[in-house]
Length: 178
Image (cartoon, rainbow, N blue to C red; front, top):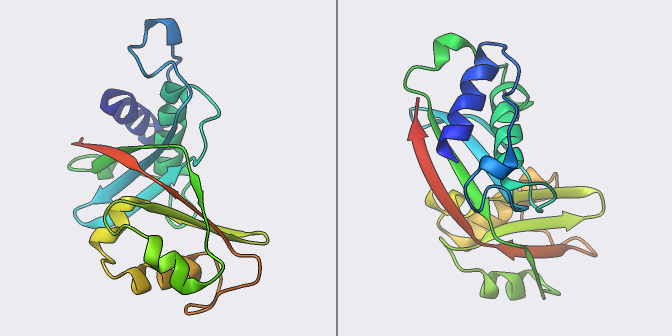
């Protein structure tokens, strides 16, 4: 996975087309459906992060797509330049299937969260956001974690919108450097 992501990031920065993949030649679990996120960092500073929450294509294709998108299409950043490749850190995070959380109120959700372990998706109407489990490193307090995720979704921190839905998921992260 790291090799696939690194190749996609380099090709994106050089404006080269994505490499074709031959799923029958990829080792398990890369041909199987999977969901992933690819995160780019310059030092400790986020430089791009794009992913999928639900498995809908082969994992190899998902990693390639998300690596290229993190390099070129994260709306928070300009496209990655070749001059930024040296020392660029990147990680590939594989997600487990999301499981709905029963939470009719804020306290109920907070009581169920497992800091450092759970990724969380919140949705209220058309507003949706997620934090990967790695975000717990920056936001270790469950209240702060939840409020920051609400804000990311465009919802008021400290609120509990009507019809709010929540899902948790786990992850496995592998990291490399270009």
